[in-house]
Each structure stands twice: as structure tokens, then as C-alpha cells.
Image (cartoon, rainbow, N blue to C red):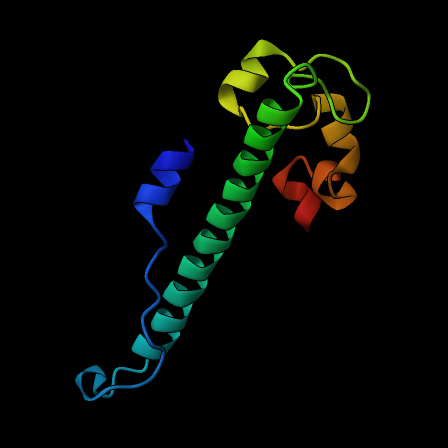
Length: 113
């Protein structure tokens, strides 16, 4: 997973300035800004994931007996959770306790009105 992320590289950010080829298209500048924001967010997410993977590899190399256990409650992490996210540090219960409370309360589209 780490090797794939490193091989993939960052998403290229194009300069966000007007050029002669844009002409008078008033939609091109906002579209360019939106594409830059998306690329920037992807790069930040990639960097965050790489940090988590590196931390998991560090734990595995330095404290192999602790790997696979929740960093808060010391309960074993489920095999399925580790298969899907081998870099995970917390069990579902502890992770849920750390998430944004607004995010967990909104379950339906009606909750946004």
C-alpha cells in the first residue's frame, strides 16, 4: 500500500492564473480553482495516509507484540478491520468516540435542512 502511494505520486497542481488561451470564458477560472482545490485535498489525504502507514510500520517493527491492538483500550482489532486498513490504530468503538459529533448525528438527507 505504501509503495503504491509513493509510486503514484502527488496530483499535479496547475498554475491558477489567466492565460491567453482561456479567452473570455468566465467559467474557466472558477473551474480551474475548483480543480486545484480537489487536487490539493487529494494530496493532503495521500500525505495523511502515508503518515498512518509509516506509523503502523514503525509500530510493527519496534513493538510487534502491540500491533493489532487498540491504542486506547488495548482490545484486539478485528482481522477484517486490519485487512481493510492495516494502518489503523483504534478499534471501532474508540474511533467512533473521536469522530466529529456533528458528522455522526446526521444520518438522513432531511437532517441537513
